[in-house]
Image (cartoon, rainbow, N blue to C red):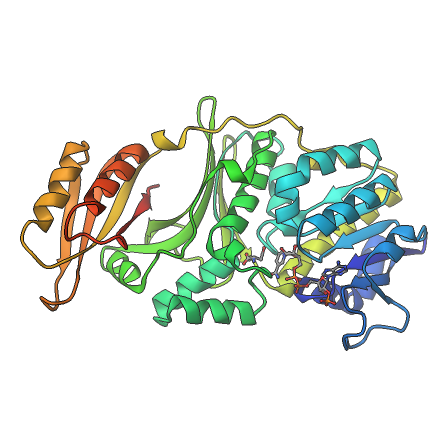
Length: 429
Ligand code: NAP
Ligand code: HSE
């Protein structure tokens, strides 16, 4: 074999970077892999749009031509969305084509079916770029840690929200300004709600939980909160108290059930993930023989993500050449993972009450926390102007999620305490 044809679907942030990578490293890849990679066709929504450097006849509308082309054994899906990629990938796998995707939204919903399809058709389905952008975290879990039992995976898995929180903290940008910047830099999903509401991170941690614990997790079943409630005031108070805000995704195996969560958490500023900034992602893995290991790198953006896509492509080409397909490690079983009840989760909490300035507020807050069995660690009030609302910050000891939710609801229903009050979890360890 001297040349291998690849069909690329999607030529946006990631697709165009992947194309540049293959063009730039054509000779190096040929030396490493022993074949010339040729991006034979590129499917896009609008082939009329001006795109630089693409040879005539390569751009096509949609993906039908790529599916039909028997000279294309590998399809790279970088178009995003769910329904169309599901159609494309299912049909490509049924036709025995190998597939590479960066699409966590698709895999977290249909991964079990698609991996089954790949197995049945002797095809590979590779997805390194779907989690952690350029960090080879799927490879670490599936290959490097093969000899370990994975106990937990804790990570910053969304570049957009990490970028927003970093800019809100360092440059005191508003949430809206920071989101605009993240969009301009190509980090955000086409629908950025997926990023800011924690859904993208939930999809990614569900995939990591599935491959770590070898059972499937539906991201819709997990505790998932985004960063839209985090204000500049929360960040400021957290900073004064020695914490930084990060959107943290966790998958942890307890005796029988798994804790899988995504929420904005306060991290001690010495925590290994506290220094992960901007669009970078960080993944902390606890496993029985290696112990703690940390993986760091750019979690969003075209070039970082293209690096992972290219790594999958190299792996597939090597396996094709060795006639060693399909790769069984990439295919988790279809059994469902049992999740730990959300009400029974336990954390320390940071509560932020927005209140009127009048007597009895502290009494209501402290009384209702006490009646719910919640132990207060410290109380701070910021009270600048008697006619303005004040901010009451309460740090509480470890308690059950159920108790905090109930106490906060009762407090917010009390006179003089406003609905914009909220609570966040503090991540220990
Ligand atoms: P994007 O910039 O919005 O690009 C999407 C591309 O897909 C465009 O070229 C578009 O064509 C094409 N497309 C859309 N619908 C199509 C269809 N029906 N048929 C053929 N082509 C179609 O998206 P992106 O940011 O590169 O993201 C692509 C995927 O990578 C998503 O699954 C995303 O979650 C994932 N991902 C992104 C990043 C990142 O940092 N951006 C990182 C990791 C993973 P037109 O150009 O004609 O509009
Ligand atoms: N929107 C995603 C993020 C892209 O910001 O992390 C990388 O998956």
